[in-house]
Length: 351
Ligand code: FAD
View 1 (cartoon, rainbow, N blue to C red):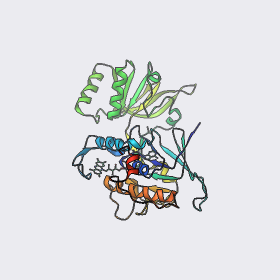
View 2: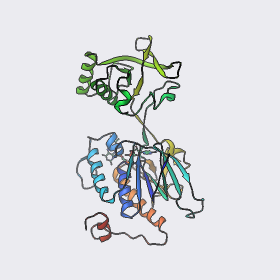
View 3: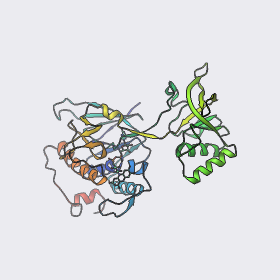
View 4: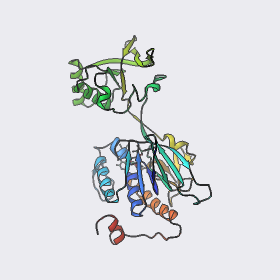
């Protein structure tokens, strides 16, 4: 059953821009929740280049993607904004009539993890989209997802004593196969289309020695068909081998690790104006084509748009002002400096 959370604003995406957006909304004293499909905050900075240096953040001569994420999280801490990780926002429902602020809450958002939010404004900070696992291109396999086919890590009690096939040539595939073998799973097969893996030297050496020692069996080929038992279990995969044979690979569990694919996914179907898969916004409040829904960071487009972190920070700041004004139509939202405002300093716990 869904858990319903009532809040002012939901930020979709915990990349650098989504995190800073939550900070700016917090300074406006709005209640905020952040949701991200990944298991950790940081978006591209954490997922694509955690250890690479960034040299163009204002006032920070050099900083890795991981360090920037830590700094943004630390800055956000005093505002106590809940982060909901490992959940993709899938559904948007309009609760209010088209004609303005008549109803509150205005929107309902739902995640694939069973969370639901009732809120009055939304900021989409979805970057290049949700990083979804690449699926195995075998027809019908999705029927066993969550039971015998796992695209995400599952607890040990699920796999102990089972015949496991890990699939892929990625670092995640190699690490998972090694971890399973290490935990005494006696029956681990690594299935990959070729004997070339995209691994650094140390990990490659570790994998080769585990294969050499027989802890991990290597199967070279591509699955072409899923074979079910009489009682409807996934029993085996039919493999087209690298040397053009067919073989049947029996298994209890399949754990594909084929890499992640960013997809705008469900958001693209919400009826918001798009231009080449980017959300069209104004440059005053970074509003999309629908009142109450804003978009900041890599996901948006406007004349002169540049996909840079610093531009996303600017967009998030102005979006927060616009949202505060929109939700408090009878107040004047004024600019205050963190340096001198006792209100802001109290919020940040530094007064
Ligand atoms: P992202 O970082 O893409 O984060 C979006 C988040 O939204 C993701 O975590 C995703 O999981 C989540 N999400 C998407 N859809 C959903 C959904 N439906 N439900 C839940 N969560 C969802 N920029 C610079 O300014 N300087 C640099 O030096 C620099 N170097 C870079 C180097 C590399 C290799 C790369 C790839 C990019 C670099 N960039 C740099 C660009 C910078 O990383 C991006 O501009 C920045 O990450 C955009 O932030 P964002 O928060 O908008 O989106």
